[in-house]
Length: 458
Image (cartoon, rainbow, N blue to C red; front, top):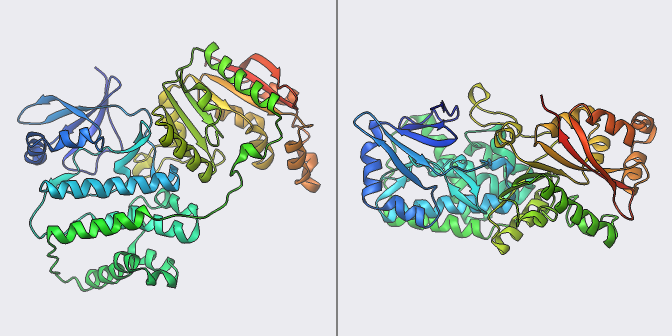
């Protein structure tokens, strides 16, 4: 059997994750035996499974040296800096619900990292089985500060300054410091009792006792902790962000007529059926309109878009329709998330995670002109990028006569001539390095072409 230790799983002395024959397994070290057995024997793990709070697992091996469990495999682990505002909120709320439930059963979360949460079957789910410890009477929640740095801080910054602050953890894997949080927030944030208590006063307290190296009496009853959790929960639940973005309600703005729109939908369904597809990534998928045309035949669909509001709309639709196969994420293909952390191997790049899936298909509808003309990306490089996404590609190419293309070219002013290469001939020539053209068809009543492409063998 082939096994490979997960390079992001090394910080916890309680155990680590490894992949064996495409299954996810976790080694539990003797230092965590007592906690694991108690969590199992009392039925608390089962309670978390039933509520769909924690990813399920089964015991494979149990001896004096180690316990090995096999966890349900999640196709694609998304990270906090790839979530919309509502997704981030729901991840924070799940963490609080788990901590409250833990306290009620005399356990506690020993860490509250946002990386302990990912999205699976339409909802956030906790994936760190070994994050639970015994609750000690009157001991504070040791992960409280981490929760503020990973969840509450970024959400509050987003409330005041916009959704770019949801990407905080891509640059600070440990979370944004309390001192920085307090300094960044506007003076009016002091008027909020929740922000005052959980950020400003906490930052002052943290700085004072860190510099003085004093032992602090941190006694806090279980009832007080639950009250703290409830206060944070209610505040986060009612948090909102009001920020208009470029692609809000995109499909109400584009220049398709009904015939072209319907043609595109039908062609997309025929293409996915022709490749016998079950898994898909939709690049520039906006609110998931075209991916939803495939939901009855696809097992798993990633819908990636640069616009957080479009991803938010997609996520709301997913919740409303209870669509378990769709995963909306915020991705800028001009700057996709890289590999971060120690040895650049703690958090894996977007491209690496997608390649590991060996997806059947990739949709790239109404996106190549933005990549090429707005992003200044040559066809040769975008072809290389798309070749990493899936073995089959359906890409839409707006010709130079398309109104959007004309608008983008006009915006280049004196540099417009640099983009004379933007035409069908050059597109086909550069993409032929990585793909063969299976089918090419003009979209009815438009100046756009659909290309069905198949990736060439290495």
